[in-house]
Image (cartoon, rainbow over all chains, first blue to last red; front, top):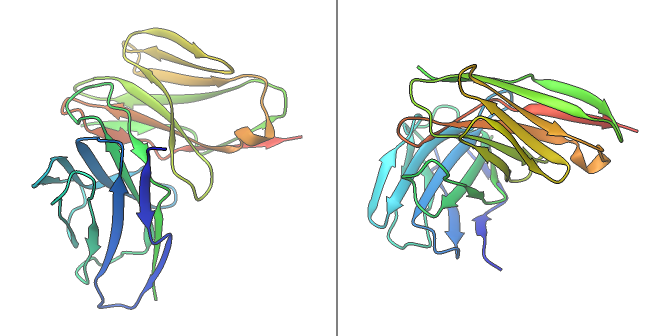
Amino acid sequence: DGGITQSPKYLFRKEGQNVTLSCEQNLNHDAMYWYRQDPGQGLRLIYYSQIVNDFQKGDIAEGYSVSREKKESFPLTVTSAQKNPTAFYLCASSIDAGTGANVLTFGAGSRLTVL
Amino acid sequence: GQNIDQPTEMTATEGAIVQINCTYQTSGFNGLFWYQQHAGEAPTFLSYNVLDGLEEKGRFSSFLSRSKGYSYLLLKELQMKDSASYLCALSGSNYQLIWGAGTKLIIKP
């Protein structure tokens, strides 16, 4: 079955450490996204990629970095520069990013806690 | 600018009908989405409206009025498994989604 796999599901990090969240999809989708979800707030876009070797900053990119070396993979690194990294991180993909009817398929999420 | 409002929490009874409203302001409109998210899980797509009117899918229906900046999700014959958060999302002028904070729906027996 096609889908999106995120790992790890739970992650604990000490302050000052970088961590990388994995996101892999086998849906043959061109576009991939990283969102952050905090209680009481809507999903906020961190980065997105419409094609391999290209990605764009979203609304809250500071303190995060991504790469898109393969169509299937879009890892997110949460760096020590991110001041408040504790959150639920969601990876998503879509067929493309340039249409209105752009249905997203989400991974199960990664919950990061900074100790 | 763009913003979306939806109620924070609603309570309904099993077997009943509930309507979850979403109002928005935007300078460009390319559609409105509803997603369902159970606690700690991934959001899943429910509906997409780009034209005014009602779209029906089984027990769930979604309505859009572009002139009023208003949408609602209607859930009929509520089941306990419908307890979840319902997220309204707007596709704006650049096709990126702007998300509401979600409405937590609690179903009571």
